[in-house]
Amino acid sequence: MTAPQAEQLSIPGPVGGLQALVETAHAGDIAHFGVICHPHPLYGGSLTNKVVHTLARAFQEMGAATIRFNFRGVGASEGVYDHGAGETEDALAAVAYGRQRWPRAALWIAGFSFGGAVAIRAEPRARPERLVAVAPGVTLLDVAGVSPSCPWLVVQGDADDVIEPRYVLDWAGTLAPPPHLSVLPGAGHYFHGRLHELKQAVVGFMKTKAREE
Image (cartoon, rainbow, N blue to C red; front, top):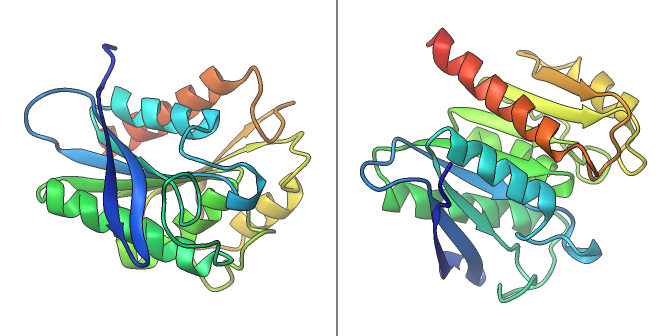
């Protein structure tokens, strides 16, 4: 895959500008765009995180444009950390920007760790075509009562030492419709040495769902 065209910019957020990186995989009409949410703002999470980068590349391989952005208070984004509530609004602001820029494109939303939980919380209002949550931080943010209605994927390492894998899998099993689960044996929270497998799990899920339509 050729390198995507990258554009660094500030997009309108609820409490000020949000630093963002927009990447387009090809010229011409955009049929899909992805919004990707990064890990915890207070523990070094940002749009440059390797898992977030991998999710962007997976979506781009499927022909989508992507929006990576920094939550409020991270990098050049204005505002301060807001315990997940404000960060969910930030994600929805990134979705709104994408819909304004590509009004005919379908939305895919994804996130890693804290950002995975944010993506899950945003799903009911964002109404994406697909949702991907990688090691979602369901122990970090309250996701009670949220049951995504679109086809969605959870990727979880079974050696995760940050988000308890059994808690994630038990929680996912209570939902209807349940997510598709991809469990990577021996993978830790940050998927060190396993990013290629993570990418392939996401691309495989997206291709399977595309064939089913």
